[in-house]
Image (tube, rainbow, N blue to C red; front, side):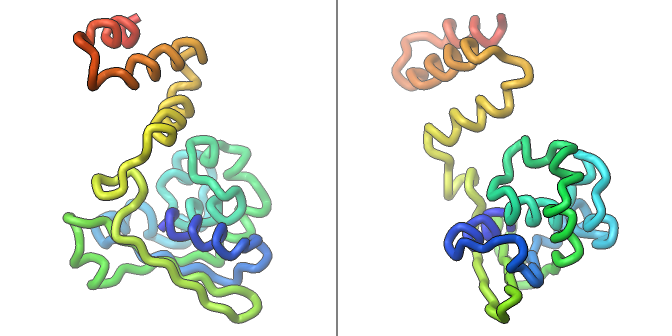
Length: 181
């Protein structure tokens, strides 16, 4: 659903104050983790609560237009604009979406705007899935973001460079040494 929200807000240049409601369709198999009970998921108090809240993920996608690791930091959890959207976001599950799993990981978002427009976006699979793999630049950016707390920029760059030649390298030993160090 976050991919759906990001697509809608960027395609239509939607601002948070334009959102009247958002309905995120989630797979039933994960609903208890990210959508139920909805009252709790609409009121995360810390980063862990936020990471397991579909309403929070959708609100961040509208307000910050991102869903990276930084989007789940405590200052974002406390952000007034994000918190103002949370009660407007609900979740449901649909048999037609569930029927595609586990071969596909579909999602749907219906966003109603304050001017009465209803926008909908569906996906069959999220970015980063087998059918929609991240390109090299997106993978490198994700690696950099996730390892920033534990690796210096120079080490990140060395690992990325070693990984970029992995398919043609005669040995994985240089990469192994970088990862071990």
